[in-house]
Image (cartoon, rainbow, N blue to C red; front, side):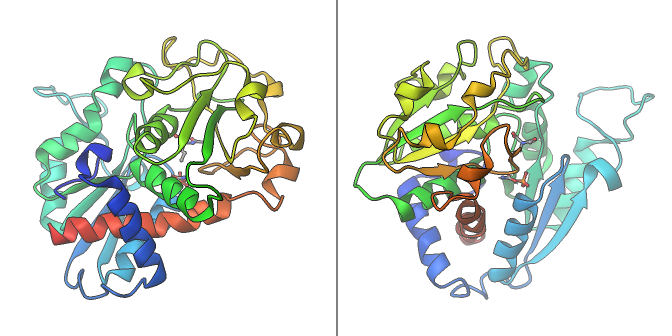
Length: 314
Ligand code: AN0
Ligand code: CP
């Protein structure tokens, strides 16, 4: 694998899931693969899980890790070609990516969308610039429109916990006070479409995701109907794609509660975290026996490890 920006970089997604499960069973089986190799993690935005799980994954493979919190410790980057840099930006991505490539064998980047300019976000302008000017493989740590390491870990978690061959998985929008990216739901749909599951999306009208991802997946606007018989309920807030970056609803009746979960097939609750308690999901569900959020976060390590292993073996 030459890069990991989306599922399209993976020829065999279910093979990668199996590889991650094998690494979970024997995390140090390839602890020499990364000897004398360095992973650089560049964060343009905050992170807990992606930061720590990817470091842990690299350590399990014997790699060294360097972390650059670009938003706090780096120079302000310029992405425009031909820019006259007499404003706030101090270093062009051309030099920055080329220089980081001298120090690292793989570069991970986290870059959230602006939620202001849909076209720039959806062409992945910032991630694309890193890829263009880096001379080593690039790994997405969540980009403007996708979060593939999260989706791989989610698939792994569903694979481990499913009680029937083809479980029903419901992706449900849930309310949130701030405008959030569509990256997690876009990516979840993109990966789960390739998995042996029955996928259903539910959200209020106006929250349709880009058709590029959802084509062929049923959308049920009545959340209660969607939840009937669900084996997994994956909650996530996102801002509007059509009315780009806008909050169209904060309707608290979309929060996942015990009453909502009672409609499911004793379904498990999933969320990528961080989660706002009693806004997205009620305490009783998050603290209940059917919550998988901690297991999902644990699986982030093995998802990242499987991906790093393939990037090292390239
Ligand atoms: C981010 C998002 O929704 O994309 C990161 C999730 C992993 N969430 C927040 O900013 C709360
Ligand atoms: N789920 C996830 O990516 O969490 P962080 O934003 O804390 O990395």
